Length: 279
Ligand SMILES: C[S@@+](CC[C@H](N)C(=O)[O-])C[C@H]1O[C@@H](n2cnc3c(N)ncnc32)[C@H](O)[C@@H]1O
Image 1: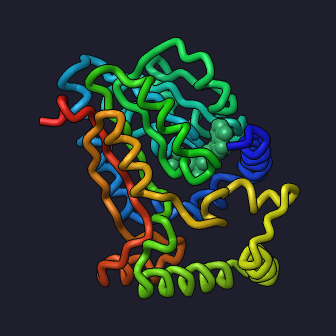
Image 2: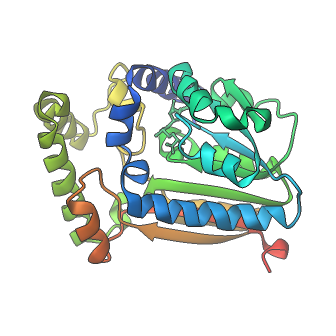
């Protein structure tokens, strides 16, 4: 994929996350906002950490797109050494503050991950990409690079990405869209409902604008979601066993428990480890 597209997306993220205060970020981040999703995420973090800790006294984690630290923190609390990378200094300031009790096991790099991955100097026990892959235009290349950064028993761990939209069952899609629309409406002028509808209608016609940061920051949210099957195929080709965890996620606090109770699914996480190590 065109490097220019990656750069535009990276800069759009820098702008978007440079502007966002933490409260606004969490309101739009279901995996941090809702206790049920925090529980699911916490359970998976423990599972991944415990597996890594079987092979390393202090597991090392590379957290790409680490943001404000809500997901870096649990790994630190469990005892890992975390290298957190993000393009937004604004988000990383929050992360440093949130994780300051563990600063002896925390390394923070403010940079575009494309730079980070260009000349890697280290291998890791876990590469974590939480609520991140959908920001990266060529996420398959990114995942491919991540696999080369893992120690022999290393684990690739992703969470909170949208399932490929055309693979989501109609009831889940409709419920997701209505929940999202009502959440935007509930935010009043901050919700920018009219602007959102206009952008959606434009994108329906296949028109994306380079100078519209919302077209480029949440890159795959505004397109067709992530192709969970292509990701698994790639990882399997590289010798990994994959476990896909699909679940329901929305910013809307009323719709979240209802969608989950109805068994709807629109998001996924993935845990992948080398087949020979996955016993
Ligand atoms: C939705 S937030 C996720 C933050 C955190 N991982 C979480 O789960 O809450 C996405 C983060 O990715 C960062 N990001 C997006 N593109 C990036 C890039 N090319 N290089 C580094 N960070 C990037 C953004 O700045 C933002 O903090």
